[in-house]
Image 1 (tube, rainbow, N blue to C red):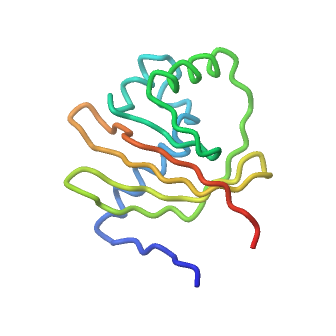
Image 2 (image 1 turned 90 degrees about the vertical axis):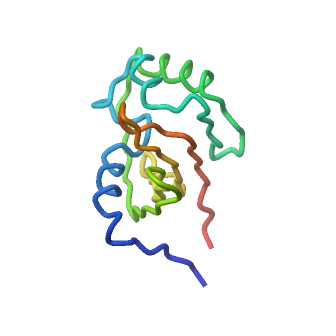
Length: 131
């Protein structure tokens, strides 16, 4: 049986705000400079990539800084967004991402709303294997 998350109607506005930020680190409108990226990440941020490797904030900022020096065209199709409140002003967002029309992953991000704006705390990508 395949589980499908439900969306609480009271979280739809938050979901819509966070949908505009995902896929995270691929939205140029939120800034491409290291300072911009640092501003949107929590100091405790870490990521578990689709490979299963764990990446810390500084490593991620180094990689993104290099990526945005020569940005290429990315084709990202996202769908099935859901939002769950984990704690006050802290939300889990899940979605499906089709990258370059080839690789499908399930994504999850934990975001915190702060006085300075949205900060991402955690991100994970898991490759979808055909049934």
